[in-house]
Length: 199
Image 1 (cartoon, rainbow, N blue to C red):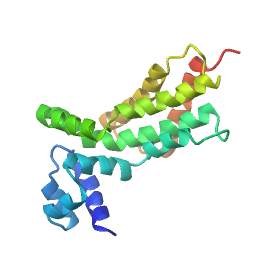
Image 2 (image 1 turned 180 degrees about the vertical axis):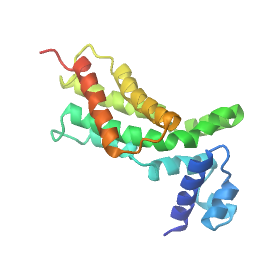
Image 3 (image 1 turned 180 degrees about the horizontal axis):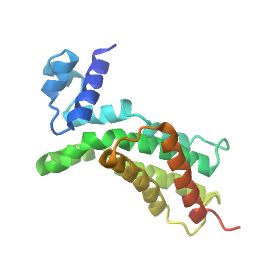
Image 4 (image 1 turned 90 degrees about the horizontal axis):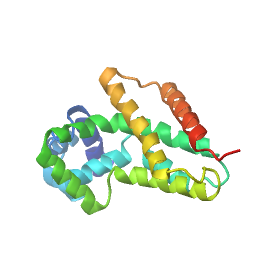
């Protein structure tokens, strides 16, 4: 296993246990068996490390599910494609929520993190934008009703997934993959009823 991978594994564990605000780069480096200087040879900042953890260690792989939307061709119908995204989003938010939640208790750290994400041109808003863009393409093809507000539709789908992840942490663990799939299917079916083209 490479040095970078060991650091990512240690970061995923520590940030998952303590949250981003309380997991220091020094502690992460030590847990991986390296110096803090070695950590900074592979990652420019704590934000860079956090983004890598979410991209490479978060379950569900939301980024990959979103990329598959534009490559689906005629293989998947709209409902199947959206269910794939919803399942990935529930898993991603489920894992990412405790990592990021501690940021909101420290306004200065949150502001610095937000600025760092903006400088890297990454952030959670891009997930909604990617799904909205896909739905706009579907609208052009007639798979989604012409009157549909695709920004609102994307926000509703991802917002429902985020809420499920939050409630899973608040009310108790729900790690059953079948439960996430059933939720995604119900959510998408309900959504399709509202945005499907008129027949």
